[in-house]
Amino acid sequence: MTIPLQNFIEHYLSHIWTGIQFGDFEVTKLYLFGEVRFLHFLLLLMGLDIITGLFKAWKNKELWSRDSLFGYARKLLILVVVILANVIDQILSLGGAVAYATVLFYIASEGLSIVENLAQVGVPFPTVIVKKLKNINFSRKDVTEENKEEIISIDNEKRGKIDLVKVAIDAGHGGFGVTPGKRSPANEYEWDFNNKVVVSAIKYLKAYGIDVLRLDDPTGKTDVSLTTRTNKANAWGADILISCHHNANTGKWGEWTGTETYTYVGKWTDAERLAGLVQKRLVNAYGLHDRGLKKADFHMLRESIMTAILIECGYMDSTIDIKKMRDDRVLEAAGKAVADAVAEYFGIEDKSSKPIEKPGEEIDMKEFEELKKELAVLKKEVAKKQDKPNDSHTPDPAHAKAWKEATEAGYVDGKHPHHPLTREQYATIRLREKN
Ligand SMILES: [Zn+2]
Image (cartoon, rainbow, N blue to C red):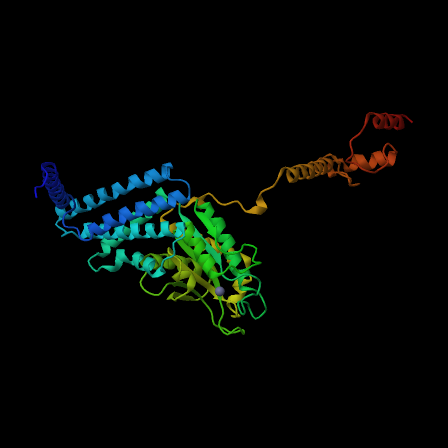
C-alpha cells in the first residue's frame, strides 16, 4: 500500500508546521511570561470568558455593541500586564512573585466574569465556586502583603474609574410583620428602621455617582424572598451588596447594646475591608457600643456572588439602642455612613464637599411669589413706621419753653409738638397771632 505523495507531504508539512508553531510559542512564552505558573489556566479562562460573554451579549442583543467589542479587545491587554509583571520580576529578581500574583488576580477576575456571564444567561451554579474564586488572589502565602495592596489598588482603579460602581442594597424583611419577630417590644417593624437607613444610603451613594439597585420592596408592603434578593443582585452584576438590619436579642426590653457588621464565614479580604470601613462609621453615626466585625452563614452573604456585608445597626429590644433608632437624624446619618464607607472602599472622590441641598431649602416658583408678596407687605409696614412722626405730646427740651408759651397764647393746641406743619396750619397760626 502506498501513501499518495500529496497526503505524505501534507502530513509532514503539518507536523513541521505545528512543531515550529509550538516551539516558537514555548520560546516566546518563556521569554515574555517567564515560567509563570497557571498561565495556561488564565489563557483557558480568558477563552471561556469570551465564549460565555458572547452568550450573554447574544441574550442581551448587544453582540456587536461597542462595549462588547471593546471587552473582547481588552482581554489582550491582560497579557500585556502579565508581561509587564514578568519584566518587573526579572529585573528585580523577585523569582516570579509579581507575575504569579498577577496571574492569580486575573484568574480570579476572569473566573468571576465567567460566573457573572452565566448568571445573566441564567445558568445555575454553586455559590461555593464564586466564594472560592474570590479567595484565589489572597489564598497563597507567597503573595506578599505588599502585593496584596497593589492588587487591591488595581482593583479599585478598575472599578472606580473605568466602570460605574454598582451597589446592591436591601432593607431586611418587609411585608409589615409577615416574618414573626422582627419588631421592637413596642411593635415597631424592623423594616421601618432598616428602610430609613437604606433610603438615606441610596441618596448619598447616588450623590457619589454610584449606581444603586434596591433588592427589597421599597414600599415595604411585600417581603421579597432572600433568594429573589440575591438572584437580583447576581444577575445585575453588582460589585458589592449591603444588607441593612437591626438586631433583636430576647424580644423583651433589655440593656444589651451595640452595632456589628457581618461577612461570610471564612476569609474574605475584600468583604472584611468593606465591613471595617462601614462598621467604623456606623458606630460613629449611632454612638453605640462597637461590637466589631463578625462572621455568619447568612443567605445574603452566602448566595451573593459579589463582595457582601450585612449590618446589624443596633438592638430593637434595647432600651439604649431604641432611642437612636427612633431618631430619624441618626438613621439618616447611618445611611450617609454606609455611602461614605463605600466611596472610600472604591476610592471615589468626595463629591459631597459640595453640600447636598436639604429638601426644605428648595422652593418652587409659587412659594417664591408668595414670599415676594409677604416681603412687600413687610416693606410697606416698615415704610409706614418710618413716615409716621413721633406721636409724643412732650416737646424736645430745646423747644419746651416756646411750645409752652405758644400753647398758652393759643397759637397751637398743645398736642403733637413733633408733627410737621402744613401750609394751612401755618396760616391758622399766623391768624391766631394777629388776633
Ligand atoms: Zn433583620
